Image (cartoon, rainbow, N blue to C red; front, side, top):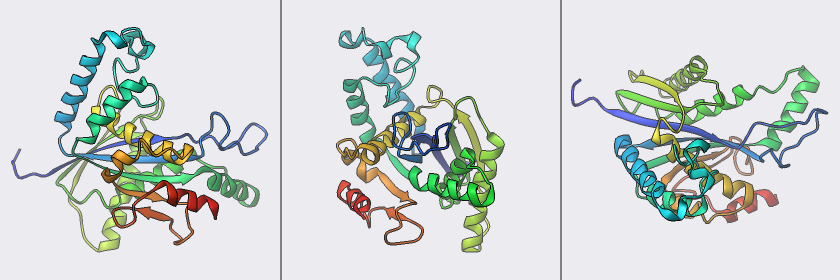
Length: 274
């Protein structure tokens, strides 16, 4: 393969859930077991092989440390930290070490966020007026299209690893969503993209980059769900774009956070006070 071929490596995961209603049709957003927000994130990693090596080396070191020997998530049979880092499951001291490691990696993160309350209210109106039910996969695929609209034309070969949603791979639907993102970009800028796109649904234990994007999403989720910014702050400069699609105080398409408009806890609180 010619050396001048340019590659881009993207890793995709989600945070939150898509539970909206109980069996009686009442909105349960924000109640135990139902998050307030749903987000999909993309991590662009310059050197996935180095990231894999560093995460594996850290895990091997932690697995032999006497302090963590008795931790349930570190037991191989638990199939948690012993096979892959996962911010929700990892022991607090281990999570801190993973955060220190990923801060030093060459990573750029892009996230699209939906408010589940806003989606639930819209879903109730659509069902009442049009008889249409809310489709969870449609929400996910829409965020995929938004995230990749401007990311697919920057390399000859674009490799995308997407965390499996439960037991679903949904390669065809994901490929359709990403192809639509590419078409949207071409239509907007009146150009033709020749990028070759390779999509790989995978588990985090198989692809280290998915463990990285999981941690970035967990930190952002804690900011949105609990108004805790101690995990987000050290990573803030790595989030290149955060699209808060339902915060329409200033613009109809939502609030976009970037270097020009950095996301802070104070801004989120301002949005919720309106």
